[in-house]
Length: 383
Image (cartoon, rainbow, N blue to C red; front, side):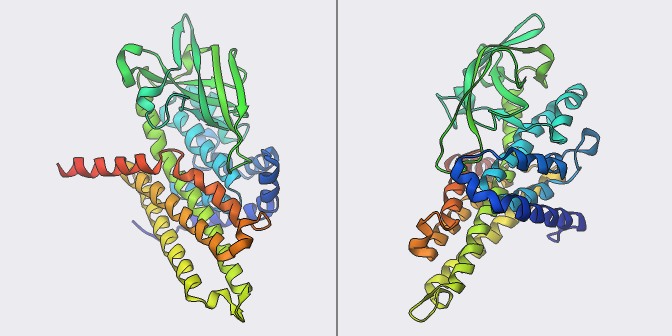
């Protein structure tokens, strides 16, 4: 594994950083205050080719590798967690199930428009009676009648569900088979019987739409099944493995933003006749945050490299997401401490970074679930 970025990876990072600084950063605080979904920002991202960055060129994308995707998510999240989450979810959860499991016809019909930025993609897994217990909590049913699937049930915590062009939904197609009776079905925006529920009011990430979805005899064509019937649970797990790299990168971006703000504030703010940065307590917090975020970066890079070289990466993705999210949480907490009372005010961005990052320890596998994943993988290998 070469830790040096390639020329292409550096170019992507610099392009995305420049775009984020110019087009997103000036509006980030306003987006948060107004609970605004920045549709115009995503239109500009589409024009830059960002909404299909890791998708092969034959399907309208940029053909970039997973590390480049992580770098892009990191740079965007560094200025806005809301835009970063929506972007990461579009690529990992909205596009990748179609790319990984779809037929050529499905890719041309559904993936190409997403990669070109003609709309956002979404994934609907969680339901009201379960969160981490995905295998046992799905109650949404899909019954094949003639040439159509008839879908009934509901989903919650669906990122971009209110605006998505297409939604990959996990449904029960055979109740007698448990998790082996789950299937993934593509549901287009405007499908008969698809009802968009309320947009949730959240602690942070106010510019990212988290939505309830209801399926009331929702009808979609038979050919919208992704892969084979009964493969949905496996498809969801594979999708979440890749998504964890993206959420880790999102956390890294937010942690970086908090650290950079902390350094700037500590050097400018004085107390007892000298800059805060001269005090050992402040220096140690900056040192710890720097060290932990760099370790997170290396874990993310390792997981991305394993994925791109077609090796097993589930364990490394779990470790990367777990460590990055918690390291960023600590960096954001330290940032507020370094800012003191100012850090608790909305006049300074560190309180937004803290609120936005909190979701990264929950979404796509809570810290507790990921510790189980890691431990069970290690113990199984050692048995």
